[in-house]
Length: 196
Image 1 (cartoon, helix red, strand yellow):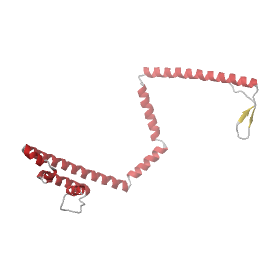
Image 2 (tube, one colour; image 1 turned 90 degrees about the vertical axis):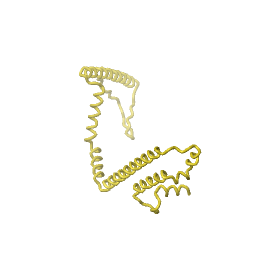
Image 3 (tube, helix red, strand yellow; image 1 turned 180 degrees about the vertical axis):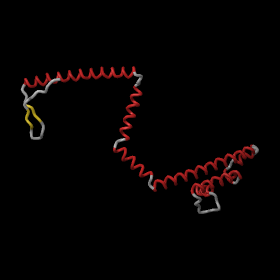
Image 4 (cartoon, one colour; image 1 turned 45 degrees about the vertical axis):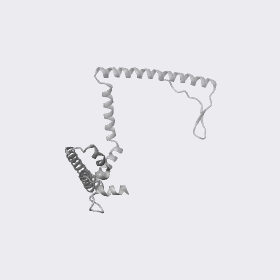
């Protein structure tokens, strides 16, 4: 490696160095720069040759590039897990998960999910049962078909009322049974609101 040149320099008031170079000093610096760049290029070629040699050794040992990536990721993850920010964050999350607010919220959401799931399951069973009953009924004649499809006549059918009651009871279970008018189902109340 080369030694650095000792050139006359003076420090200006703002801390930057300014050189007073003559032409022969500039030539020396250009020569030194060319020499340093050649050394850098040589070192790059040596490094590339060493990397190829290491890759060949890994291949002979049966180590694939994927296993190297896995090993590097594993090592990096271990370093992350032992870092101070990770340990601090873990302790904070553990404190949060043990707090009473978190526990109450988690339990409340779990209970709401169970009630909703059970209610939806009941609706599915009731609708399936009712559709099976409807399938067993004979089809109406074509002259009656136009009258039976109208919404007002459907609203007064036993099938429609049965589905109305099921949906209303599910709504009451999910919302906790809060209602202003206990005589009508939840579906009937929402249907009458939508019509106004």
